[in-house]
Length: 151
Image 1: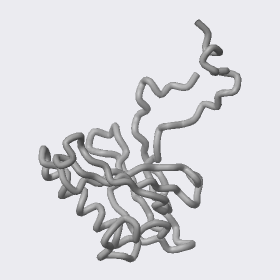
Image 2 (image 1 turned 60 degrees about the horizontal axis):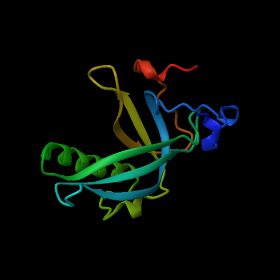
Image 3 (image 1 turned 135 degrees about the vertical axis):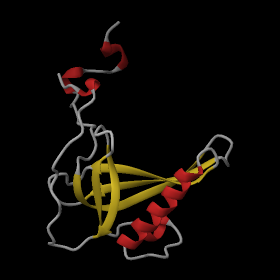
Image 4 (image 1 turned 90 degrees about the horizontal axis):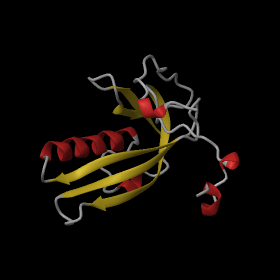
């Protein structure tokens, strides 16, 4: 069995970095969003916001953030999700936004840090974007998972 029978030619495949955004501050915009639900339609409801970095070394890198608004199995996750939406809305200058639609294409800064385990990088805050203002530079990085080694 060859890869070619499935239309795969490894000579034409570009290897990409899927490690995500590192520790640091990133000017971003929300390009789109989707409402998602659990299979039963009620136990978990969340929004996935598709974001893009628009300046700096990571320019054009895509990033998705997930915001639970209902989570019957773990209500604290929904509480954190709703608070995160509020912080993001404030950073976009729309503190009382009624939907993600109002936040599309408004610049903000996403601040990412290592979690307590020092294994994962998470968004911890959002700030207003000010053109020309200095951004925090990455200072530490999570260890790459073993499967992420490049050939």
